[in-house]
Length: 400
Image 1: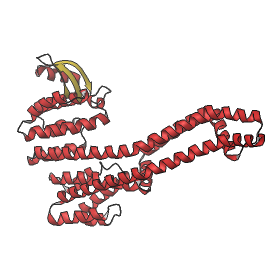
Image 2: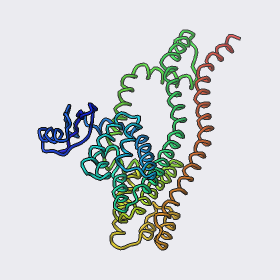
Image 3: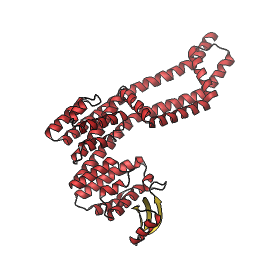
């Protein structure tokens, strides 16, 4: 079994890492032979496991930093152990620092860098480990790490663009719902009591608003519980294979957002596939691994089917041509790459093309959403104002 250990070396420094052992006693014996004094030993899958301490969000940026720094130091002529020792002190995230310490311990035992990376599947993806393993076999570790760092930075930038584009409408909608809720619970009931005391006939918009307010006040616990339950159910359902497939299919068919999702998938797929092919990995294996990074079940299934066709002897371009999910440009570029023997270069150019398309789509989406949100806000606020003021205006006319 794999055990995570924390021990003290002869210099009094705390060392952390993973060790293969039948049980804890064997691990203790091994550590003592390495002149380490064990402090704590736990199973890798336990709650105190090192990999579980690294949060996904922080790990993404830390992995980019780790890859870039490691690539730079290897390019400058440093050995892996020298580079890792320097990185240990440069990493800001304490959990990531423990990962680096564990990797150093594994490398000192004679394991390769890819094997050390593979000990932390929650931090380093299977594609990442495969690329490093292929780079080690080809003797191109420094060059592949540079390309990998470049692509990780591009992927992080792309996710940031999409996140920032969606943040504005989400904030506006949340604030609008919050204001409406406050109005329905606190403001409208006061005005409703005033209208009842004045015994005036309420127009239809006011009746609608008052009705919604009464329902909200009386049934808000049930509405809150129902909303929470619905969100929980949708999340659970989306984790199932059928639920994920249905939602991903619907998302691809939505106006504008469907196009954006397709373009993002093409960026991830072409970039990862190009990197894997560029390191000399088998095409079928590269396709299978690329299918795991696209983040969309529909495209994942399409890429796996593509892999099966290629395994039977069909060229990649012809296999893509029979599936409408793959845009014509990627099909043509793949065919050109196959004919010229530079498939990885063609795929990288395709990823750059779709990356530019994503940026343009996001700009257009942001530009279109701003007036749409303003119109939505104007309609909502206008309806509320009309509902509140109309009865008062009618009362003033009656008095006059």
